[in-house]
Amino acid sequence: MPPVTERADIVVIGAGVIGLACARELLRAGREVLVLEAKQICAGASWGNCGLVTPSHSLPLTRPKMMRQVLRLLLREDAPVRVKPRLEPSFLAWGLRFAARCSQAGMLESMRGRGALLERSRGLFDEWMADGLDCEWEAKGVLEVFATEATRHHSEGVADLLSDHGVESEVVTAEELTRREPALRDGLIGGRLFPRDAQLRPDRLVHELARQVRAAGGEIREGCAVEALGKGELRVAAGTIEARTTVVAVGAIAPKLLRGVRLKAPIQPGKGYSITMGRPDPCPNVPLLLAEANMAVTPWPSGLRLGGTMELAGYDETLNRARVEALRIGANRFLRSIEGADPVEWWGWRPMTPDELPIIDQPRPGLVLAIGHGMMGVSMAPATAELVVSLVTGSEQTVDAQPYRLSRF
Ligand SMILES: Cc1cc2nc3c(=O)[nH]c(=O)nc-3n(C[C@H](O)[C@H](O)[C@H](O)COP(=O)(O)OP(=O)(O)OC[C@H]3O[C@@H](n4cnc5c(N)ncnc54)[C@H](O)[C@@H]3O)c2cc1C
Image (cartoon, rainbow, N blue to C red):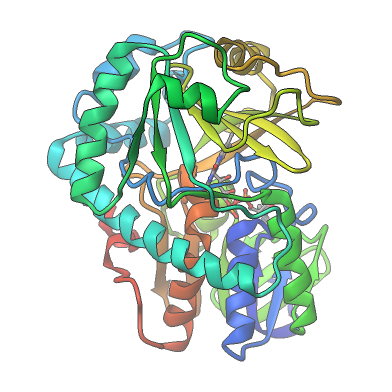
């Protein structure tokens, strides 16, 4: 690396929800923080996601029989999960790890690790919101909606399993559904409410975190990509920065950056799509999970978002039209109107690990990883940041860090 041009206490790389949550908490712990962002604040997956805060989502995709389902859907352009088979060694190794985890024991292990972070985060979100984060937060639950008996039946088994792990839910009859949600079409057979779930507007949350970081004396440098990581230092276009601690929070890009320090993080980009629009009329009252369409609908005072689908197609930066249209088709099946003003189509890479647990770890002194949050980065951000503070400062851990260490791979 070229000679050092700048020194910093803590450098956080990435200004998505995870990076800025970590920056906020590190500042509160009395540290000095410099955030480096390659593009602009909230440029990655943190922008167009569904903004659901879901302690109810502890169940991972790595379940028994999941591989059979994935193989059945393989290659279908509009399937909720699409896998583009490739001979890349990192992708094949990831796939093998994922397949190996699709057992009862693997599922339960991931479920415990996810549940701990989700539950702790849900509690911390109440504290965060009381601290004046203006991001359209509402805690009215998330409602799963069923169009077919088979899906409803399946959901009962899932609800029992969740209940065993402390996640409660309430059955909603077809009549109640019509009364609660006039925006839904007739003919749906019922639903299930997860009352502890909540919602927020994720881009607003991230910009509010950035505001609080700056107000607390932190610096955020946009348009400043970290080109290489070294031992205790990192290279940007303007020179070399020496940092006491570096926190890597770059989402799905992490494996590329970590190569420089000879660390392998098994993360694949799981591309998802969303369409954001003005509020249609009628508009749902609470966020909906449309079971058969495998997608979410989030209503905010400022608009409506349809989001979902999972495409494992590598670092492909194109918008797959069939998949965006699948969101419209899925939503149309359930909602009376999706005709909101000025629709914006978007895609983002979820940072997917093969066991669906994030990597929150300090694999070397001075290097902390906060990556791999997959489908749950917003929901897990507060507890992740808290854990990062304990790793950096040695303070007591409120959530056991063991399940998230890099060395499990
Ligand atoms: C369709 C969809 C719906 C979703 N819905 C939900 C939901 O309802 N609830 C939920 O909890 N989660 C949801 N997620 C998942 C969530 O969006 C992600 O888990 C989360 O955004 C990951 O945040 P992050 O900060 O790790 O990554 P990102 O938001 O991707 O941020 C990484 C940042 O690092 C920057 N960066 C990359 N490389 C460098 C570099 N070399 N130097 C400097 N900066 C760099 C990037 O520009 C980016 O700004 C959804 C995801 C998708 C795609």
